[in-house]
Image 1 (cartoon, rainbow, N blue to C red):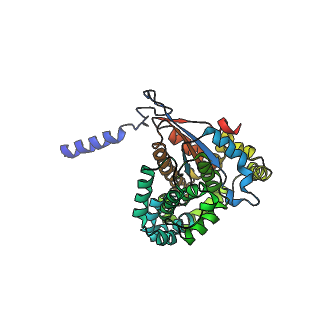
Image 2: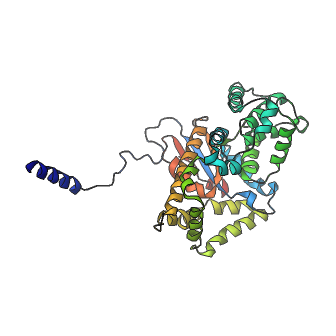
Image 3: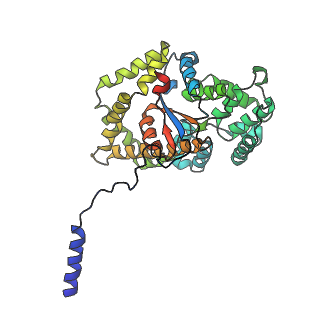
Length: 355
């Protein structure tokens, strides 16, 4: 009995121990004070998804490209899923079918024309870039474009395509008719990865863009099915309709030729706060039923963490250099918060080029 009483006493004592929130032992915000070499600079450009707009043409964003060229990034990341991630998702079609259809290019025609599988194409890209000449011949650019396509990196293939003289934009060196047709069509597509990131990379003489999106995080949502999105629509419907006014005006600004005004809106601190308050902060407080809003919030955090790791990897290719990350505006506050915890990354305000 004495032994039992002692056990009960110990258990009671253990439950009585207070639990305190743990503060990080080291504050990692900002550039590490111990850094004695130049930090890597990263500017996060929050963007609209331009493909959703009517009447927007490449010429409407020329003034933005001019400003970004002054920043002169040495590496550019985009909201595109890396080819290797698409390969992983292809290995699990039952888990990722929707993401594959939405975010991964069908590379089978390109692989047939270049006679490379995924691993061979990725190795070919690394080998070519590892010994890339200062003045590549057209055949070398076509060969690298073919490898990028087969590796599932179409935007980087487009960067090479645009640096060819018009007469050299033809089949050969691994590019077949399907590859050429795809690149010509992609060149006219109105989305930010093409018309901002890839165009800027080609203009600056870069050899690629780095794909930084992630949809392996979609497994967080998988167990909840369509019921989650029905609940999220209920949450979003509680927003003040006037909160959309700024986005409507920004679209009008783009079409009217004032893209800088639109991008000042997308990247302003007030727009960022409003987006967080109307979406993720509401979702994280969802206490009804299965708490779908919390699952949605977790998914977005996981996605952003993995995306930022890809940005950091891109920055590692230009240590002490300049990186531009072009990403949907709702990702921007997460990107900047997470990047600010890296030892050797200095965040550069978009005010530098937009104002």
